[in-house]
Length: 146
Image 1 (spheres, rainbow, N blue to C red):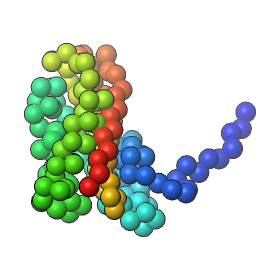
Image 2 (image 1 turned 180 degrees about the vertical axis):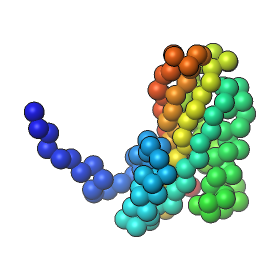
Image 3 (image 1 turned 90 degrees about the horizontal axis):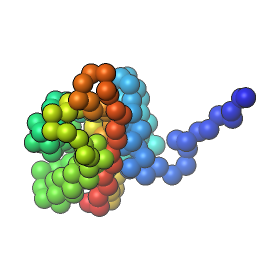
Image 4 (image 1 turned 60 degrees about the vertical axis):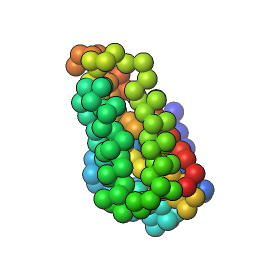
């Protein structure tokens, strides 16, 4: 069966959908293309970072990694009205990514941050495993008003 081509990037784009798409990219070239498209077409600012390690370590460093990425990329300013919603969106996304995992699980994830005029989104996508042959795909999304 031949499926009709679906252009799911046309029309209105929200920051959550944009962040999820960006977190699902396979390489830096795809990231760059989607980031350029989001900037040109929707005036969204975005950045991608990767975080990996043992679950307890990830929980301790994910907010710092995401905040650093957003500030270093210049998509957010170092003020409470930007950092506060970023932290909340990161914690919300982490609930989907790090939900109900044994403490010795390893996690490898790509984190995308997308900022629009009034909203920001943090999307996480990756894998978790207790052992290398037991990988599970996971995803999380958090959206907050600026």
